[in-house]
Image (cartoon, rainbow, N blue to C red; front, side, top):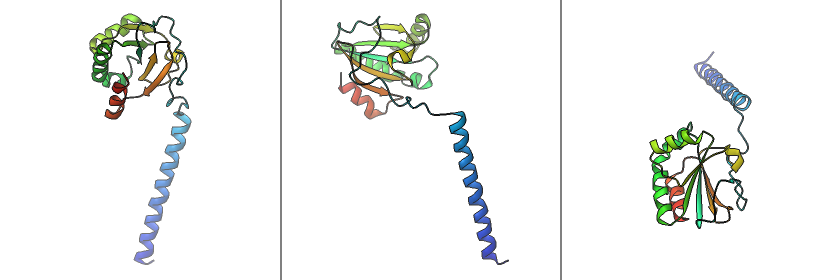
Length: 165
């Protein structure tokens, strides 16, 4: 066998192995770790946020932080939430934190992260249309969703949110 043929055979075998690994990985990911079709969607714009404990009429806008104490993206976003809370307070807007954990655990978490909120509500996150954390929801004085942001926000997304206050 010529040197060129041998090299081509080795390259072909490597390519076949790489394709098998890729296909195997995709099959395993789709079978054992299916993507939630709602994971990239938040509450629908214009929909009413279902939080009976929330008082929407006391402020022009309310920011709902739908977070989870076990979410590392939520913890990593704490410095931004601190800035967001201060900006909302300056604009006389309100910040509500919604967590699935008990109120005492949620307050302890927010205190440790130094995130000031007006109200802490314990509720299943799917009750407010949230399927991924963190999700930030901007709500008007009638409790209607005007904007949402999902996941750890980029610098541009953070500026966008702050500009809407």
